[in-house]
Length: 221
Image 1 (cartoon, helix red, strand yellow):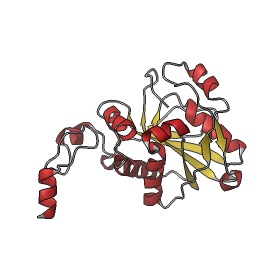
Image 2: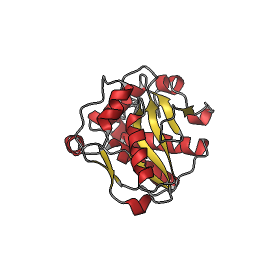
Image 3: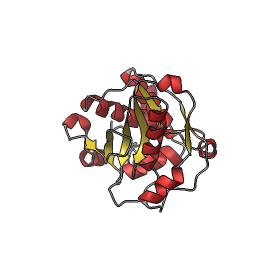
């Protein structure tokens, strides 16, 4: 009865399109439109960077995934990270990936303070719980850089030079690190993070993101 009343007066919403679910377990439209990992679609192997060996993502960054990411990052819905991080953990297992530690891509202090939380950190923590892999908060964004949106691939790389620092080199030394982020665009941010981790002594850096943009699509990562 308690659960019935809760769903009646505070019905859950679809984590992807935000439609009211009522008493349905999930959104019928998203259930048929989104590829489900348990149904066996091939994992997305994204473009490799200079320092990253492998990058994978669960979904393409298209509706309704765009809306889902926006809600997580900008609409104060951190609980969505439990669902999305769970799907990322599922992809990790499906691809038979290996990692000694998960490292979330950090936001600037200004952005994290404005949002109240870090989406990549929440995603990494959920993955860590499900996979039993430690999460290391060893990356820090030390420079407030201009927004990456609208910049070319080369401009993005230049924009991020010196933006990140490893706060504990000993923690990553000789370890295989999996970077965790919400959206992969050109890979400039992830690659700069990987460069710093490798310079600190990490053995290898891969990345896993919730979504990836198409080659010519602008984005924020």
